[in-house]
Figure 1 (spheres, rainbow, N blue to C red):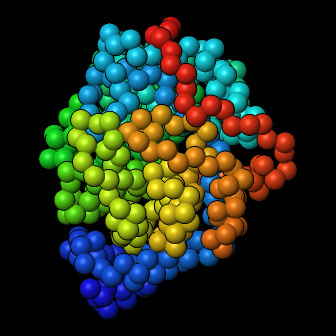
Figure 2: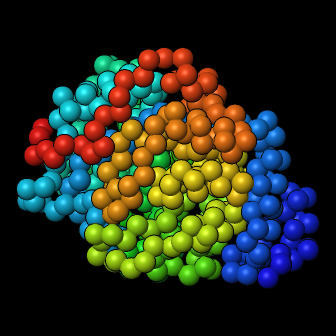
Length: 377
């Protein structure tokens, strides 16, 4: 069904869409018209024709987790022999490889380990900052809330102590879909919608910038996808603390939920609607990690202005079946072939230069998967 003329005019004029209009676009909007509207928003916000990306590494410091989310194929219970906690020696190797590839950030996330309190993270962050010139983009809201509980602290106390130890920004992981009905089904131990939003609002109030995510295509309704976007938009109105929105499709392989993955058309439709609904978000990322490089390119004409991360290492969605890998040269070429100029950025979306691989001798990419390790101190 064609996009209603009144809705299209509102988008092109930079006016805010309602919940009803968002649901209608997601359910019935013409696919190509949606793409063109989202592309118009991207061009209005980013007229310079640049597409950014970041060189970082997703370090999953532990896979031990008490949440037991039905959609996750990565976590392990104690005392599973497959559970691990990375040692400092293992972390050092990963950080040094990241720096050698031109990286300026690590994305540090893990499971909700029952034995790790605030002191563990304070000591870890201080050691990293004393040893390496690296930005720590770490700990999802669910991890923050878990540290609160284990350590008997408020969220503000936890965040203040983590920032003092070296935490620079917070990723949006664990949002999944911000609906308590959905969260009851797929992973109640991850916390409520209010928990996730509270961590982010507190972080923004303390001066931390964060990202926002959505993992969709499981048990949520189309209305709940739009409600998720509205939760983010309303919080961004209050704080302005989100730098970007990242959405990806549920990866069903090897999970307790199983089922069929959404098609790339469904991914692009949701991406485009997110771009037109999130009028106060400066940036939207393409999810080539779950969709592949070609759909990543198409995403740049469906509202995305950022190609995400080089993702030197990724273990969570790959455990559930995602297998796409790109080098920095391939990312730069994909951006160029889509008609844009590739530029490296920071977490705050500050441009730091041309592709690192164009001007440096880049070492080979490290092994695709982190080696299996036993629990270590």
